[in-house]
Image 1 (spheres, rainbow, N blue to C red):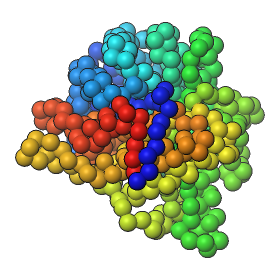
Image 2 (tube, one colour; image 1 turned 120 degrees about the vertical axis):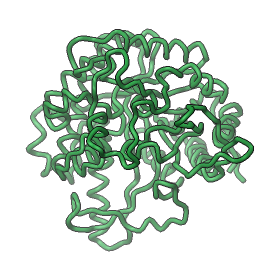
Image 3 (spheres, rainbow, N blue to C red; image 1 turned 180 degrees about the vertical axis):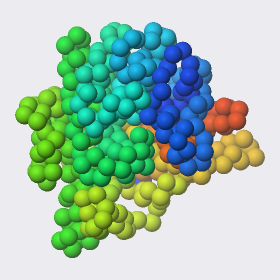
Image 4 (tube, helix red, strand yellow; image 1 turned 135 degrees about the horizontal axis):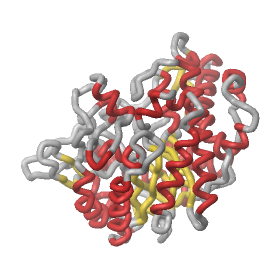
Length: 443
């Protein structure tokens, strides 16, 4: 066993997304988003919806209590764009801003640092009807939305994340159609959506910075080290291509103002003069969402002629994702060595397992505890070796609406009974609570 001790000011907490937990999709003037439309079209695997989800919209005080009791000092939540601007622009719904006002005040009263994310996938449907992330019309509305929300909350919320996982939105929402809005536009659909999110992000960062000082501005990207299935040249090249798409378009866009060289030719019809400077911004803090590595191989017929290879792994989650904590360690070292050791934090890390409530009324999720222990230890090792890591936030506080999987996959450290909405802290919750309160993990 190795003991890792974290700095006193290290952030410990959890992350959630508005659409996945709030419910109340028709309450107080909220407008429809792409996931409402996707759900109505029958695209959710278990036939469920987010109409109620965890009912966080009405139970937020109870959920803050769970954060406080765990000893967490940070909480990353997302703002629902269609709660504030039902059509994506135009008239503001004050009731939407009032909800986040109450949430922020409740977090601060509990001693918890609120970290707001402006976009976690709930694009207002009227903006999608105009082209969504396939066009540039969305850029101005997103910057204005950022300005409106920050004007209301920036006196108390000091940490602002622009986007969550633009690569997932682009690949799954516009490339393969597995996520809302469900388009199957292949390679160019992915790259257009990535680039336009980069542009909107740059515009939003500048809009907030123009009106506020003293804020920590950043974004959140799902980053997964890409490696080849084996050392065959075609598979090595495939892994490099996918790394360029999945990791570097978003990452090097905001940090370096660069289009990855491997994608430059494909994107030359998308990128306009001045775009590379517009997408670059000196952010203060980068959120990293990490779940596993990506092991890739060359296979024609898939976007960029890349497909999943053998992960060479013997531990798997209920999502059929490999358990690879060493990938998180390698990722954090990459930022130390290749990106000037910028300030980063783990904004999401967790696992879905098939939890059950035992006769004692508890959830003994030993696999998730092991997953979290190994990944927190990987962060501890990176911190010990000089990586500029500021915090660890698990995914997720609550079991929730897991996008196209509906309510069938459980990532929470707190179980939600979707019939009664009862919250049951799992063993993993108590494990993280012990780590957060002590600042120490052994693995």
